Image (cartoon, rainbow, N blue to C red; front, side, top):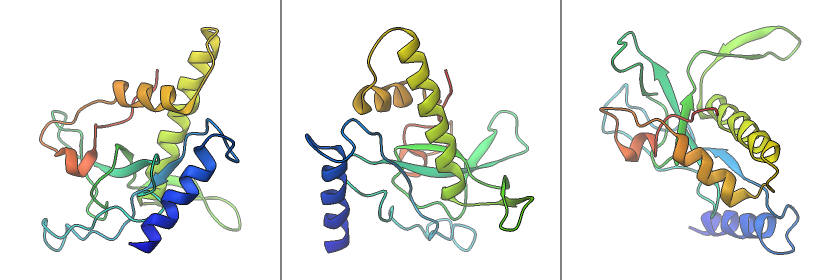
Length: 162
């Protein structure tokens, strides 16, 4: 519980009036401690820093072969995300050069961050100022709900670019 409060305090410091990053949108991975492949009920709640106040927590999705339901929750993804994004077999830079396929909520989080940047660009092009609350609202309103997957597992749904 004390670590959760620590991340609340850090979030308030970063986001609050006079904070280090006023207006910043904080996006964090929910964590990879769940083991649904062992037992679909074996899930773990989101972990720090995603549980911090005002943080957009991101869960990981895994593609399926079913066009009617193209994604399922990744077996390792912790519960409690606000949004979800692809997080299995994502091409990523590899230490020493090259790329490798990696999986994790840390692979899903950059998708949400990138989409947030695209929404910020769209807002700026419309001549409006960008703030974190407005950006989070755009992300949430544009998210695609995923049939057959619970809010607890995927949050509002799959993040969508403008």
